[in-house]
Each structure stands twice: as C-alpha cells, then as structure tokens.
Image (tube, rainbow, N blue to C red; front, side, top):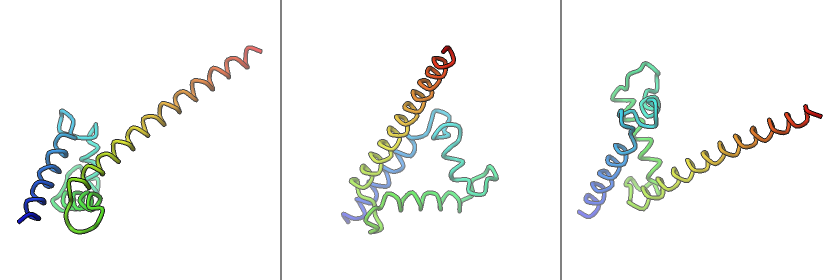
Length: 113
C-alpha cells in the first residue's frame, strides 16, 4: 500500500512540476522546446509513441537507483541538478559576453596606438 501511495504522490509531483515548467503559452522551455524534444521525427506532431518514449526516458532519468519507482528525494535531486546546470549555463553565457566585451575593448585600445 505504501509503495502505491508513494508512486501516486511521485506521479502527482511529476505532473505538477511538468505543468508548472510550461510557459504561459503551454509550450514549455520557450518557443516550443518541450514539444520539439518530444517530436522525435520532426513532423510537427507528437504521436502517442513519441509522448510515451519521451516520458519513459524522463522517468528513467529521475529513477536514479533503477528500482522502478521515483522517490521524492530522487525528484528533488533531479530538479536541483537541472537548476544548477541552468545557473551554470547562465554564468557561462555571462562570462563569454564579458570576455567578448573585454576583447572588443582591447581591440579598440590597440587600434588607437
């Protein structure tokens, strides 16, 4: 009974987080990114098989101990990892932008000499 309850709570959390991850147009990940990831063959439609494969893969990513169920700890760890990766990517972009800005500044400085 506890396993069923655990699974249902995890599933509810997964559905809730999936829905909340979508943008206001229901596209998720901006400009249809979530949809594009599910649309494996690129035909601008998501078949039941594509939908299922995408979500099965996502479930496997969440189920770190491969026991066939997702615990709240596994889900939290997954979301923390994704959040950290997103922050790292944002910092990398910021650093690249600063480096580009600095290179332009140095180029201007050297061309004046």
